[in-house]
Image (cartoon, rainbow over all chains, first blue to last red; front, side, top):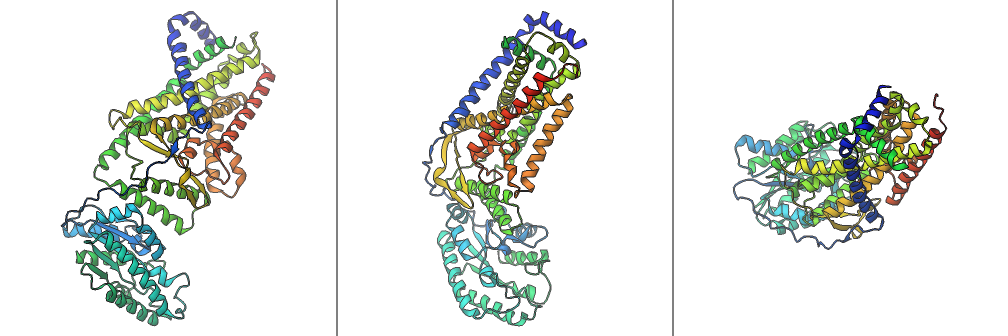
Length: 269
Length: 324
């Protein structure tokens, strides 16, 4: 009954409180209803704007990095991404840490645009993106790891070598040539670090044959691109040939593996 | 005849202080949001938004490639990827923190759980409280038709739902404007991103200035909230305690959302009102959890739920025994 009394009370002093208890809330909600009702109706009537007249922007003015400070990006496949690294840092994160330890000036952290499982066509279409081009122009170190998935493919050389490894290599090599050409055109002065191949299957029956193929591949890379003074092949096969530095998936490097690769890049800077 | 009743209901609702609590909750949350936006603004001063967006796209792609994501997550990731790429291609930073953008984002961010819950808090009270305070007998024995009583309660609830949304929008501007840039109402925004499977149709995209885009997003959210208000009125009629009706609403909001996320194969889930609730999100370009949920479908579905809930509410309320 207490509330009922309160209700009766409120009737008596309603005039003094009329504003806060009625006029204000009612006006506010009326404004809200009109405003939102207008919005809802304009959606229903399909007044959701004009077709986009923005052309893809021609790319903003890329600010060239200060020449002495490292500004790196990393592109490519799972190896570039950092798959298998329990810390998730991968080459990019570990390189930043390593540069910091060595007191090498770096303008910013390393940007990681790599995608696990990427093959050369994937990377080529990424390089078409205006934004990626801008990022490349703003960098002076470009780290690339690509080609592994094209070579190993889904088939997995784990069990058997492909019928004709050399023809596969030729095909992939020409794709990589296209890729690196594209990168060079966009960013003529940057240093390119290309991550070499290693043999993850050393301890399998096919291990010996595979190691030979990997070495052949790496030497072909050097042969092909070695005349570019700013191209560096980052050797990795020795890191994995006699020491087990593979991640749990027995394919990608472990944390230690990534750490050593990052150090090699830092050595070169 | 109906007008004084609405007036009376409004008075009671404000007296019960629930709306003050709702405003308080909004104020606290918006203060936290504006602080976080301010921090983000400070941290991002040197960051490169192009690189950040590009990295986000790469991260999405990695998660998609890894393959063990369920279909509804995959759809929303693909949708977001395309949206971000669209902004990147046109050199527009979609996340530059400005107060108008916070206002715009509020419709999406709060529309999905916070606002429906607040409406449920208001709505649960409107009938149940009469019961717990013992005033229902007083009310029902008056010479007023019962449907008029319930209609006045419904109108009042709808008015308060509208006011809550407006208060959220106004508060989000007032609280954030002093600490982050307050201009930018005419910044370009894009909507109408369409997806069918993996392909993305950029031709369907439309552009609007932010203020107009915000009006539409709020309009859609408002419609969704009216549906929520109708459903919570029904719950309030069914349950005699406010706690039970708030609890049921909370459970269906959270449970329904989880359900659509964990079992995307159970496609009947698209008929839950929760699946259609985030209208502003779908308008902005997020993918609904199930295939075949167009905006029209979502709007009709919410309308159907609201009408159904109101039918149940009226049926029970007009027949209930006063001493039951």
